[in-house]
View 1 (spheres, helix red, strand yellow):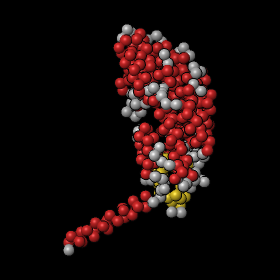
View 2 (cartoon, rainbow, N blue to C red):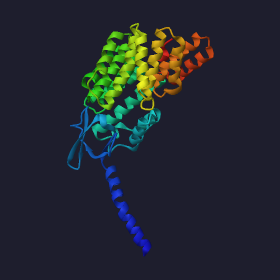
View 3 (cartoon, helix red, strand yellow):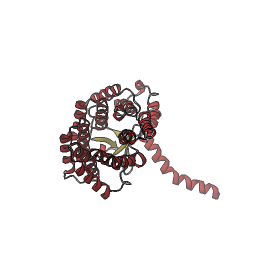
View 4 (tube, rainbow, N blue to C red):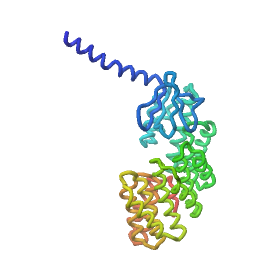
Length: 351
């Protein structure tokens, strides 16, 4: 009797959780960066590039895209869910393989079809940038998605990826156009600052140092003071140092980066420190301090290599610096790693 009573009690405890799980699985879900997901039906008509609108049992919730981690749909195939999870953890090839198992004609809702189209194009773009795939084809795929779904909540991520591919292709006019769209129309003030930083980097790629510095200064001097805005200001500070080197004032750039490194922690943002040490290396090169430049780029190779573009830049410079100090084996190692791991990077094309 006691056993049956215990089982009954456990059932009472577990039933609400099981009901919640069943409810979650029978609805669209919007997962946010902080807090619980919203379960309901995504309103495709009202959802825009700046927010996802979801009907939660008759209550309309408007969730800014800057707060969203992922959106899942009740009627999407399991392959799409697995693919999305893989992509969000950086397993792009695995995610792409799952996506290619899906028959788009089997998807009934337009928003689910659009989501499939977006993730297919996203994977193409990321793989082209990292592994040397067809960048032009990746651009066409993402542009096709963006034109067909201009109000998609994926719009600004799509625009950034198109810009990245355009830079890799040397199509700076197109990069400027897409990054400029983010800088002008981003879903929040700090997101617009991100767009301005991307735009400035595209200008740097063309050695337009004065124009790039103007963009970086606008970010640095912005009155916006959110955590994301402060992070963009620091990234802009690193970018400005490169501009100062290009404008023949590398000592000012060195001072700027030394302040950044002194006043911040690498534990908070490793990508920032990778960009900072690359900028420091560039300034030292301009100042004719070869040994100091080598050490700066080595910091990135050893400690701050997680970001592909940042690491590729450091490896390129290391291949040159090792050769300059008569260490051909180290130079070849750096060049081989650059070509093998980052074949799609613009840095691997430089000689």
